[in-house]
Length: 126
Image 1 (cartoon, one colour):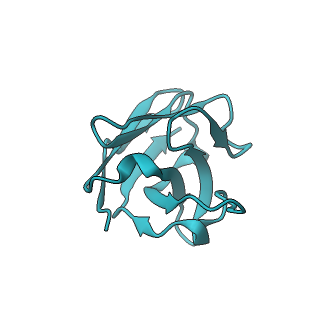
Image 2: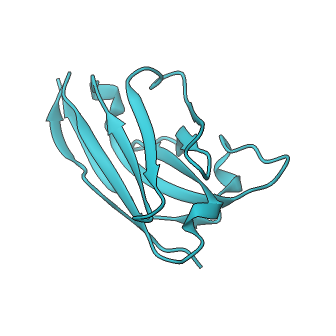
C-alpha cells in the first residue's frame, strides 16, 4: 500500500511559480510510475504529466509542456511538480498518483493509477 500526501499549493499571481511536493510512504515507491493530475471545479480530473520510476523520462499534457517539470527523488520517496509561468487556467486541485508498471499501460489515463493523494489547491490570480 502506498500513501501519498501533497503539499505546496497556494495562491500565486499569473506568471509566478509554485513547486508541489508529493511524499509517499512505503518501501516500493521507486517501482511506481508517478503522475500528476488536476481538477478544476465542474470539470473532470485531467492529466498533467508523469515520470518514469527511475526519473529517466517524463511526459506532459500539451497545456503544460514547457512550463511544468516533474522530478523525483527516490531516496526521499518524493515526487515534485515545478510549475512556472502559471496562468489563471492552471487553477485547480492538484493530485499526485502512483501506478504500478504495466507493459501496455497508458499513464495519461487516470484509471492506471492505484493510489492517490488528497490533493492540494493551486489558485492563480490574473
